[in-house]
Each structure stands twice: as structure tokens, then as C-alpha cells.
Length: 414
Image (cartoon, rainbow, N blue to C red; front, top):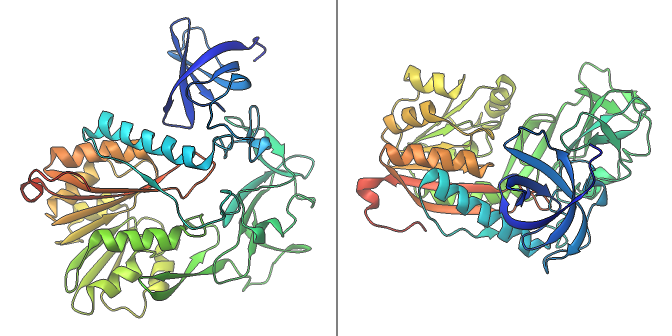
């Protein structure tokens, strides 16, 4: 878009990694800026009839005290997506995310919790934490990422959010098949693995052996107990090196004592929470784990094979709940995809009459919407923690706890 830059006075942060400004009465969502700044911004989406426009700040006229030199200039204005807060000091990034979570909770969830985004173990500069990255290859065979809100592949020379084991693979010095998708995984407790278009890749090309390695082992300590999971290399797993341990511990803390009880683990994936929950309920309890991905359920079966108290169900969570296969549950855990659980699933969860619901969410807007549904159905928010598992990005992970309103009474959210 070849429109001359416009001067904008930047207002508050908004969900999605941008700030809000106004130009001639129209809302403009501006990336690469901070509240209180004055910037020159290049419009990137500015249809005349649109309700709002989008822009990138390309020159800072008056800087915020929270601005720092970008930790990854390639993700700056006009660059790749994936590090839209790289120009923000780390403490301010966490305040930014706390503001967004609190605002979504007020606007969509109709609750008013105090929110603090917790720092998690990792490099102090906020880099080198991703154990999984995906790259695309352009027609010239160069690895890179998509330009923000575009399908154009921008060649890269580094990916500073990746752990050193991935950086050591030399992905950006090699020539790749044009148009390929590269998945690089550096698990905790196993050696790195590289996939190209889903196929294992060795130094000189694809690994065509029938028994070629396509999964990795992830080793994590939870509540002082060591665990190891087997996970498909291109399956879902928390990408921050500390993420699995931090979230598994937060979930166990939120669930509380469940010895001998029944726990429903919905959207259970490869069993990150299923396995420690099985130990928490003990041999006289039950964990019903439900997921719609056949490969994830196969991994979960391997990971929980020695725990007879685990039952696994393959199918869409809503369908399995509607079928009655879950039965009763004392505690329900949900870890849905970014879109959230949705009204139908929430209604089915409440129909189980659990004494507690624990909800793990990677999108505050989807979580807040489901907070509203739970509130309408008699479950109040009694606990909320937020974790900075995605430094340099606008993403934030939350763990929310709900109990029946009759038991919550007038308690404030912890």
C-alpha cells in the first residue's frame, strides 16, 4: 500500500499485539508501537469503507520509556510475524499482557479479576525459548517465515526465539526443496528432529527407512516426580522449554487434592496433564481423557499404558460429552485449542456437575467468552493465573478455576 505515512498519537493496548489510535475519527490498530507514543505509521490495510484500519509504526517521534531496541528486527514493520512485542522491555510486555487479559475478562466475561502475568524460567533476555519452530521455503530454496498477514515467504538468517539446539541445525544456511514446510523440534530429554513436509530429514535428505524416527521424548519434572512423554514431532506440545513443567504444576495446584476422585481431562492431547493427574487420583480414582486427534490419543495411550486408572476416548470433545461416555466427574479440566471450548461444550461440562472446573487457555478472548458462559450456568471464577510462555509475542497462557456459585459465595477471585 503506497500511502504516505500518517502521524498518530497512540492509545491503549488491544488484544492481538497492537495499540489503538484514531485518525480522522476512524480506529487504527497499530503494531510496533506503545501507549503514549507519537509515531509515523504506514497504513497496511485501509479500505475506505472499513470499520477500522491497520498500520505499522515506521518512525517513532515521541518514544515510550518502555521502548527498547528490537530483539528481532526481521519481525519489525513490514517483516515476519511472530515477535510483535520485540521492541518492548520484558517487564512492560508482561504488563501489556496483563492489561489485555483483564480487559477481555471485564468486557466478555463480566468479571473483574486482578491479573499478574508471571515470569517463567528461561533466558533473561526473553530469547532462546522455543523448542519447536516451523519455517517455509521460498522458490529459491531459502528458509524463512511468512510476512505478517501475507503468504509471501521472507528469507531469514536467524530465528532468535528458538533454543540453541535448533539454531545449531544451520537451517538458514542450507538449500531446501522449494515450497517445502520445515518443522524443527528440540525436545527436553531427546536429540533434535527435523521434518520436511512431515517426513524425517537427515543431513543429506529424507530418511526413507520404514522405522524412521517421527516422534520425540519429552522429560519433565512435576511435583518433584520425573515424567517422560512420547510425542509426535509435529504434534501439539507446549513450545516454551519451561512450558510443560510450569503448566502441569499449575494444573495440579488448581485441581487440588483428588485422591480417589474422577477427573475428566478434555482436549487431553498426548497426555501432558493426564499422566500426573492419574498419579494424583491414585489407583482408586479415574481419569477420563478425551481428544479428537487420533495420533495424540495413540501417544496418550503409550504415555499412560502403565496407569490402569486412565480411560481414553477418541472423538470430538462435544460429541463424547453428549454421548454420556464421560459419566460423572468431580473435577473437569479443559485445555481447548485457541478458539476455546464454546457454548455447547461448556453446557455439557456443567451438566456433569463437577465441584471444580480448571480451564487452560492460550487466548484471553476465547477464555473470557467461556468465563461468561460458565457464569451464566452457575460457575464462578475463583482463581486465575497467567504465564508469560511466549516472550516477545502478544500471546499469554492462563489457568482459570471455577466452582459452583453456591459454594463460591462472595469470595473474590484469587
